Amino acid sequence: FMPMYLRHSFPERAILVCMLLAGSAGAQTATDEQRSFTAGFDSLSLDLRSNQSIYTNVRLTDGRVTITAAEGATDETSFEDSRWQFAGGVSIAMDTTMLTASAATFEFRDGDLQFGELTGEPVEMTDFIEEQQTAVRGTADRITFDNRTQTAALYGRATLAFGANEYSGCD
Image 1 (spheres, rainbow, N blue to C red):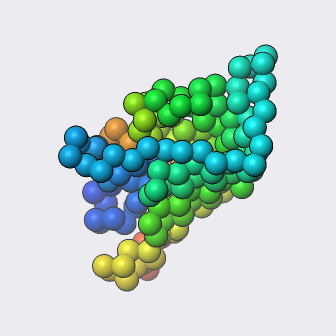
Image 2: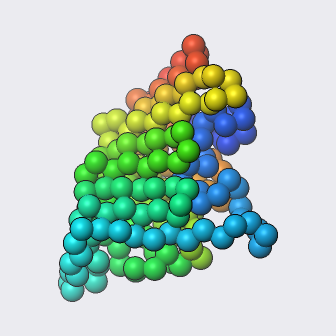
């Protein structure tokens, strides 16, 4: 099957998925305000067999991006080099963009979000582009995001609506 690919340059901020999970728009430079992710949660347990920390009602944020879920798990508690897995009512918010999913996995390197994969039936994305007074909606069974290349791909029953235009992906 062919995924529907999106690139950040798609009409300005039309598809913010590319930027959504990034701590900043594009790559950070030494002069950019440094953001770091922090974690909040209701409870924490340690699975000694898998060497994973398991959080309930977890919330990760860097002040701009916020990720929440009923449960989160990671084998590394810092954001320097870690992989986080989330389940149950996963939501990601940044500015006017919101993604909701059943489950998600995010990879962090050197304190920055590098890659994300969201799954659900469907994963839903909404945004509003104020400059154009245009709503953006997207759905898919799975959305992947690569911050290094600033691209997102929608897989499985993918749809994207930008204002009055609607696009469907190929399966």
